[in-house]
Image (cartoon, rainbow, N blue to C red):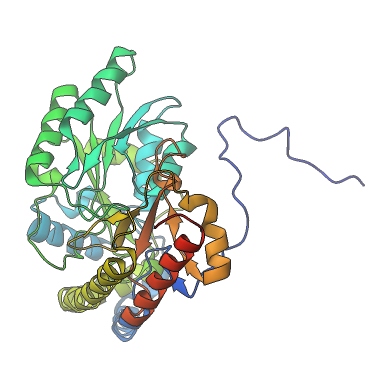
Length: 399
């Protein structure tokens, strides 16, 4: 019997192939935004889960509410009102598998092939991959240390409208941006809302890192500055409890949520995980965020000090974020950090992600790389950055 091939059967809109397996991790793993494993509240999550099982365990026999576990949505609604001045009821919150599922729901609900989407010039690769899945025409907007530059936003909007293709949405990570680390200023947030309203382009505000502030003061959510229903808000428990819990959430106008819920695959988010997150968060989340922020602040400071020591005078420059998990390192023009990434991982045991996956065009930023400081200890960060500098010098990328 001959081996069967699916080659002629794939849908026209099928996603691009993705290799099976899991990539190699370096000892000095600056590639992925993992948190400190020692800071995970394992005992608290277990206690919360045990309490929920005793009180509601029989409900595991039922399929959960399609928007997710109601008490957790009520907790999210209260947190959003307190922390982000977003006043929505629990009925207008949808839980998802991390923040990636809500973003996928938004994309499936709004995007047709060829629709124009505006993003930052370098932005979270996972969202770019989702937009590519729906064949969006992604256009990067110039940024600086204050966020999206309003004149650039308007220029890209007007250019697309001039082609008869008004943009479908603007996607932004305005606080401790991934991968660049900056936080959008209040003036820029207000300008973005004004442009959204002027040109009728909705905004997707991805606020996944907002709780990870180590210094400075919070800026208001973009959602709270709008009031017209043009801002869809997405966030997650991944960076403040654990990525493996896979629980995030979204809110937006009821009309939109009803359409987006139809794009939600797999039914409700896990009741089991929601119980643990809800019971733990109700009594302990605020103090836990303070604890992890103390840890991450020390690691950020260790990475910045190591960059000053090992990259000073090299022609490189880097961001100095007030929070989050990312530092954006830019090597001199012409350096290709993407080409040597795998060699450096093999030879120096240091992992990082180069710029192109974060670029809307998929090719820009070869001299850039994202460094995550959440996982390794301060001592490992110091050693790893030294190794990285030695590797780049050995390969002629820096002076």
